[in-house]
Length: 475
Image (cartoon, rainbow, N blue to C red; front, side, top):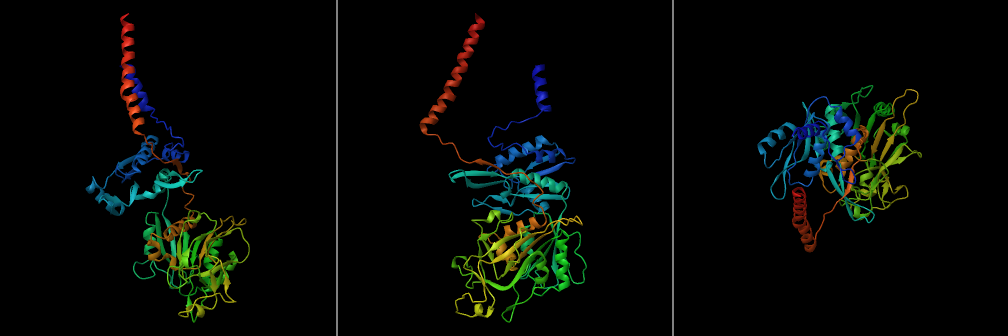
């Protein structure tokens, strides 16, 4: 009895679990272990998954690994169906949205929340497990387990991550942060509500520098031109290591595209704003009767658009085309039209009712670049890091209709570009683990054979050896 008690005590003190999966599905990475071992305060992890959900078993196993690595992580499981009162309190505390499945069961819009005091971080359901086709035959289902990325990233955010501040320029007819109206960024703010972002308006008129507290600066759809001094201020901010998104849609007057004020300033980074309106002639990409609002399905080689290649669709328009003034490895194409598109320099021909648009002799031949990313080099003299800049020839791609549509990926593009500009993609670097999905199928004969071996032969074998031992001891 003493030996048994000592063995149990040692097992309790030196707790460990074995992972026999081929891909190490439930083995924590060194990054996660380092984060968990460094915890000095108790964290609360609220899991809003019911036991019947497909992701529950894998998530529960992973949470147990986290708890085994650190006693500071306290897990709480809250089922919205079985514990509606408790869920209602947490829903108000964390700002969680509630929905319903087709069978009428309650469902939280997030899978989990990591909380430390008044700071909390949401983990979406899509951040836990994804499914895709892979393998040599292209038909084998791959289970893409991303839960460790999401959970460890959430822990890092609430323990050491500060809120990211995005400043949005005002004073030139730009889209505003206020709710209501046709030119409101409320849908963008709502879509990024779980990303710990603080939004702040910034008036450029009369300012000598961009506030140092801004992690990124956005200029969304101005209807009035920036002055040369203001434009230089913003581009100098990027040269000094800042990050900016310039979403400059075409402003038309008397069938001409007016100047945005950034034409000369952008030349210093190798980008030119064309005075041409993008016209798409591929009927499969049009989303309205006019050929100036269309779908983009061509994406460049960039980390923010890698997941959209070959399957993504983004609605754009009206938009002006962009050009790279000189070959530069630091300038990457993000969005591009089809080769059937062209840039119309004479807008009056496009506006004529009943006429089919056709490319004129002075128009820009397609395919047209609609969005470019610039990653500036660090300054060797001042030792300042290089800034990041994204220039988009359209401002309406952030409209509520485009961001909330499930048929296009405008919301993903907004999220990925914001993450790239604020350099949040380097927050957590844990590779997703993939395993072959599938099930074991027994025939009736195989199942009967298995039941015979387990239910009959094994008990008989135990009985046989028991009798043999008993007879041996009697002898």
